[in-house]
Amino acid sequence: MSDETPICSAKGCRADAVWVLAWNNPKIHTPERRKTWLACEGHREHLSQFLGVRGFLKDVVLLKEWESAHGSA
Image (tube, rainbow, N blue to C red; front, side, top):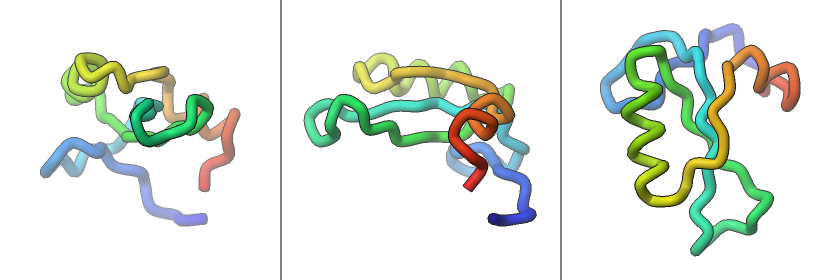
């Protein structure tokens, strides 16, 4: 477990993450597998569109809700 604040996954962004974008690539991942990207408010839409256009995006949830449901580590 880390004391560091999670940061946005967008290239070059150092803002605090607020959102979790859960995704998988159906060509290489099993259907239940979920990879995650973190997003700040400013990059949530851009990252969601990037994954969505490829058919990878499965869910977008608040980080605090994701941590409650899946644990924070």
